[in-house]
Amino acid sequence: MLTVDPQGRASKLAELMDILRRDAPAEDRDLVLALAPVIFADMPDRLALGLPAQALSGRIRSHFKFIAREIPPAQQLYKGLPGIHVGVRNPSEAEARDIGAGHGLPLESTVVETHTVDTPFIFESLKHYFQKAGLRVFSAIHPIFTVRRQWERVVWIGSSHDEGSKECYCHFQIEPVESKERLRRIEHEVFAVLKCVFLAVTDFKDMGRVCQELGGRVRSRTGNDVELGSARSFLDWLRDDNYVFMGTVGYRAASDGRLDRVDETATGVFTDETLLPVVFPGVMEHVEQHLTPASGDNRIIDIDYCNNASAIYHLEPIEDLLVREWGADGQLLGSTLLLGRFARGAFAQRADRIPLLKEKHDAILRDSNAIPNSYAWREIRAAFNSFPKTELFYADARDLQQIIEERATRPSTSPSRGCATRTRPRRRSAARSPTPSARSPSAPRWIAGRSPSSSSISTPPAWSARSIPRRCGASPRPSSPSGKTGWRRPSRRSSGSARGGASSAATSPSTPAAASTASRLPPSRFPTTSVTSTTWKGASRSGSSRAPPRRWP
Image (cartoon, rainbow, N blue to C red; front, side, top):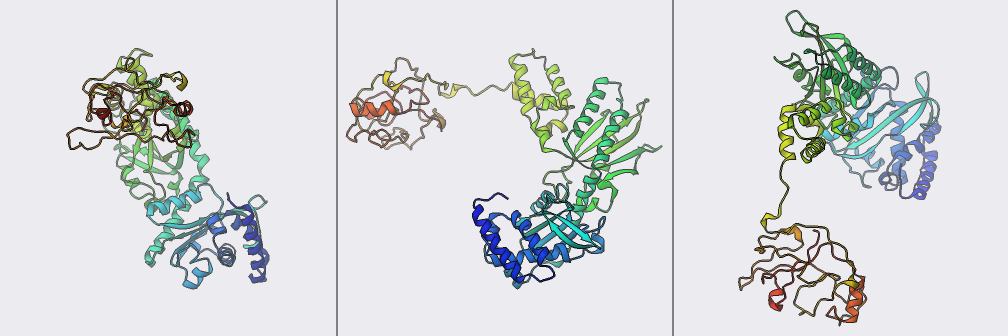
C-alpha cells in the first residue's frame, strides 16, 4: 500500500503487534500475529495511521474470526473451503467502538465481508455493485494471503508470495442498512455476483475456444467474401483481450424457424440459470426477443446494446453479441450468444483499425466520393475516428455517413461577427520594440514589449462592445451614465512590483526604471490592436486610439 509516512506505519505496526501478543487468545496467537502484518499492509493511511492501535487490534481480531474460525453455510460452499463465504451484519455499539467507530468512522454502519479463493475481478466487482446500488462505502480492504489447511482447519497463514492456497478477504464498511430483508438480499446478491465472476474466470478458455470455432463455421448469406473476412477478423479481435466474456450459449433453429437454447453449449454464467435473473435482470428477456433476424437482415454478427437491462455489478449496460450461422441455401441454422462487455483497452484503439468498424469507415469514404488525401477525405476520417466507438458499433453505416459528413463539412467559426482572426504573433524582444509614448495614468496599461503603432495592425469594421467576443481577454462593463460602453482592464502588475524591481515612481515606460522592468517581462501572446473609435474606457479620456491587450482566457 502506498503511504506518505513509512516510518509512522512501521511504528504503528510494532505497537499493534505488542497489543496482539498481549490480548490474543493463546490458541490463536500465532495465526493472529501472522495475519496482522498482511492485513495492516493493505490498509490505507486513513485507517492505518488514523485509528488508534487498540482499534486496529479489534479489527484484526474480527477479520481473523471471519477468515479462520467461521464455516460458511452449505449454500455458500463452492468447490470446497473457503467456498464463497459472504457475511452481512450490523455490528453492535460495543463492537463498532472496538473496531474504530468515533475515530473517523461512523458508529452506525453495516459490515460486508467475503472470503474466497483469490480470483481476478473480485474487488472491482464488489465495488461496482455497491456503487450501482447507491450504498456509500466508508472503508474497504482486500488483502491477499496464503493459507494452509489440515482437516478443513486453518493451521498456517503467510503472505501472498509464499507457497500455498491464495485466498482473498474483502471487508466493506458501508452506510447502515436497517431492514433485515434488505440485508439478506445484499448477502444473496453479493454471493451471486462472486459466483458469476468465478464461473466466467473458470470458463474463460472455453469461451475463447467457442469464439475461435465460430470463425471456421460462419459464412456469408449473400456470398460476400469481404463481409465474411471482416466477421472472422472481428471474432479474432474479441479474443485478443478486447472483450470481457461472461458467458456463451448456442441456439439451434427448429423446423418452425424458432431458435431453441442448447444447454450443452452453455459456458460461464449460462451454466447456472438461477444466477441470470439475479445478476442480469432483464437481459435474457431482451436478448431472446431479438434472436430471430428481421426480414432483409443478412448480417453475420449482430451487436446489441441492452439499454434497459444490465448487470448489477457493472456500471455500463451489457453488450451482447449474436453470431449467426447461415446455411448454403441462405437459411438460418443457428446462433451463438456472447454475453459480456468490451474491455477498456478496446476503446483506446483507432476506430478505422477495428474489424467491422474498418468496413464502415471504408464504405463512408467510398460513398462520399472524396478524393484521397483531400481536405474532405481527411476530415471524414478524423470525424469517424473521433466518434464514440459504442455508437460506431451499434449504428448503421448509412446513418453514420449522414452524421459524419455533416460534421466533416461543417464550416469553422469565421470572424464575420466583427472579431479579427487570431494568429500566432512573431515574438519580438522588448529591447527592439519601440517605446510607447507617455500616457495618462487613467489610460489602459499595455503589455511590455509591444508596439502601439497602428501602421501594421488592421482595424476591424464596426468594432463595438457587443461584437467583441469574451475570449479576447476583456469583459464587458455596463454602460456608463454618459451612454458609453466601457471595458474592464485586464489586471497587470504595476511597474514597481517585485517582479520588475523598478521604483513605484516610474509611471511611464520611457523612464529607465520602467524600461528595465519591461525588458524582463515576457512578450504578449497576442499583438495589440488599434481602434479608431472611442468605445474603450480610458482611451476616450486620453485621446489615445490604443486598445487593451488581448490575452488567453
